Length: 159
Image (cartoon, rainbow, N blue to C red):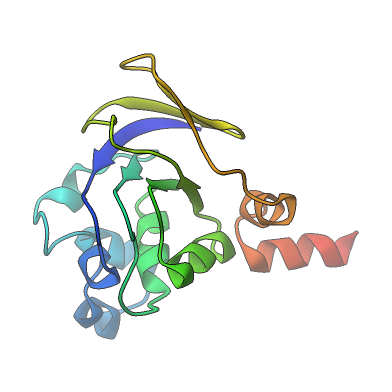
């Protein structure tokens, strides 16, 4: 997976990703994608390109357990979030919905850097830096590869 880094800081909570008031309007990912990070950067959603990667510091996805905070990013074409750490609930929601959570040192990644994410880490193609990442268990990678837990269960029941 390869994409442009879109950088945020520490403690990005689920209401910053997509506010709970938007969830009351609709839970459709195509609707929600228009409002991601609107509280932090009102123009962010309009600037997102398919394949962009979210990069953050510590405790990404803290706050409420809103699953739409994952589906809104996926609806915007974001396939992975790289962070120093994730809230436990956001991490599991990400895997269960096919969004790759990458735990790694993000301190050297800047806005707009081109990143290549592979099974063992991240390569910052802009700077040439190689960044080790925590490996995901094979079962989690299978779930992500299937597009989420529902896709995984469908595949598994067909086999």
